[in-house]
Length: 367
Image (cartoon, rainbow, N blue to C red; front, side, top):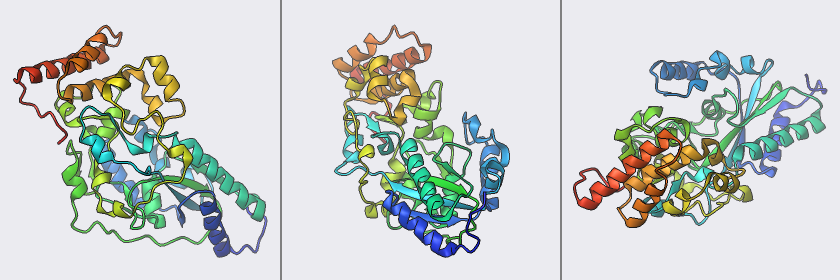
């Protein structure tokens, strides 16, 4: 549908939208057009090389992901929104340095961001509609075939860093992205320059070597993929490299020097829940499936299910210094009905026993 006002000041409207967005809790909004031809070429090459692993959904929608007008007919502009999520008073490096603790990617410590951000984008659309009349739009938050990082970079919210995440000089990398596809002919914002320079901190720190070249990630080696997206067994050679990371990985973000400018989130829903910012591995391993579902209600972690939760923690326990408590915890789960879970438990037990005997040459700490 078209905006009712035929003489709309679209520059003024864009400015008003950005002001409304900030009032709704977004740290910044920017506007891009729909030409993603360069990103499309890069994305298709990434798929061709099989670097997406088992994420078949990445190729399922054809060109709709890179051609917004095919996904939402009539789309002329995309409003990209940024919402910061870094927890205050958090010390992720201290957790990574303690192999008895469970490391959870900081974006997943609180409630699921998808619903919160989508609701805010819907509220933004309603404000536009109330002021300027009906228009065509659709809100997305990592919920459809959308090249959100390429879109945000084109809108000038930041640049794609060598770790393939968006980076901005004023906030680093600790933020979520959302989009409002619209048929409003808003003026577009200019992209920003790449400020990674000669820095390779994110590449150098990746525990599994998943950043195989600047701006190119092999998802099959990425810990976030291995602990979240992968449904089956984690490849044995990669297990020791996971350390105590049980859900996702933030190493490349932690290494980025631009994050010294990041600010803690003010969103109450993003605050850590259930002590997940520094929980002991054994405590989380003891959760029954009912406890897992109850305690993680409203959390993005819930979608991996209890079996993968146990799988991931078993690997982390196998990487921890051996102890009687760890051995006992692993043995108590050996009758688990899942063959995949049992295999990871047995692997972890062998690691613990070999280490206790002093016969394991495998690394015991985080790389």
